[in-house]
Each structure stands twice: as structure tokens, then as C-alpha cells.
Length: 131
Image (spheres, rainbow, N blue to C red):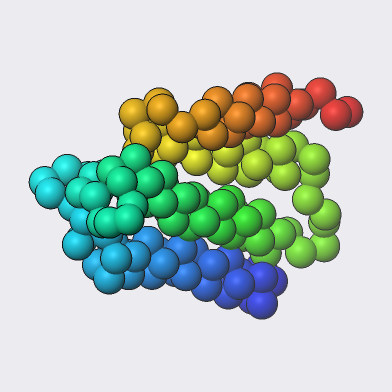
């Protein structure tokens, strides 16, 4: 195992966790009623703005975790390179998780979930097809 890359993977994972938890505690708890997704308006922002900001905030963590997965994979086998399947699987997972996040947060009203889903599915379809 390559210790530097493993440490980077763990640090990226912990950074994503801290980013999401601190955002929830410092920002989004003030605009949350009793649901998972905050929905109280915070003038001049409307409810829909708060919902997409929340999704985008956590999307940064999700994408960070996808990169952490790649770092972890490299740490496990430092003498080898990442395969295209490794990269595509990580990308597909990150985009599909992000799509679900935006879909739920905006109740399907923000079209970003469509693009994220399409990107994730295309990446997923490419797994194994690059050989």
C-alpha cells in the first residue's frame, strides 16, 4: 500500500464529511423546518434557491468522495495505473449520486439531475467498452 495516497484518500473522505456536516450545522440548520432538505426561505432567496444551494453544497462532497475512491484504488496497487474502468466506475458513481441528490433536493424541478443522470449512465455504459 502506498501510504501517501492512502492518507490523501482518507483526508479527502474526511474533508467531504466535515464539509457536509459543517454546512448543515453552520448554514442549513437556519433554513430547515423538519425535513432533511432545508426549505425555509431566507430573503432574498426563495425556497427553491435554498434547495438547490443545499444540493450543490453536498455535491462538492460527493464528487470529493469519488476522487477519494480513485486515490484509494491507486494506494492499494501503487505499481499499477488506474484502469479506464476504475475511472469510469468512480465517475459514474459520483454523477449518479449527485443526480439523486439534486433530484431529491429540488423535487425534480432543477434540470441538473437530468444532465447528471445522463452523464453517469453514459460513463457506466462505458465500463468495459473501452477495451
